[in-house]
Amino acid sequence: MLTISWQQLPWLGTAVRLGMAAVFLYSAGEKLLFWQEGLTEVSRKRLPFPALALACTIAVQLAGGLMVALGWHASLGALALAGFTLMATLVFHDFWRTQGREQRMQLTTFLEHIGMVAGLVWLAASPHGALLS
Image (cartoon, rainbow, N blue to C red; front, side):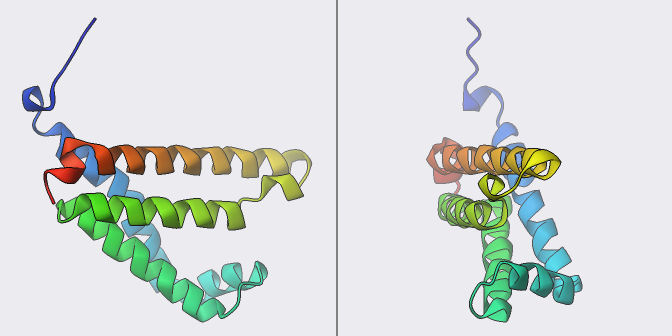
């Protein structure tokens, strides 16, 4: 059995943090640049106060993404992103309400997001989430 410790690969934690943060930082930037499209997407789900919901989404993605990427309170940032991602996934990728190809696409995205949540929780509990805080 191959066992590798964090001490043997000190760069790995940084690579994991940057990889996990990248999607959130990109998404926040895209929402800022294309505000109206994001607002339309949020409005379609009939969330109350869509502009506030979109602004909060951007704030969580930017703050959490930067915390994880920079290793500053990375565990807290990872947990905030995990909670946000879980809630957003349940609202925006409700595959159980669709059928056919759309259902398969939404289920795939739902499962990908659940995998991201698991990775963020793992990061929060790992030495590279906790020790770099």
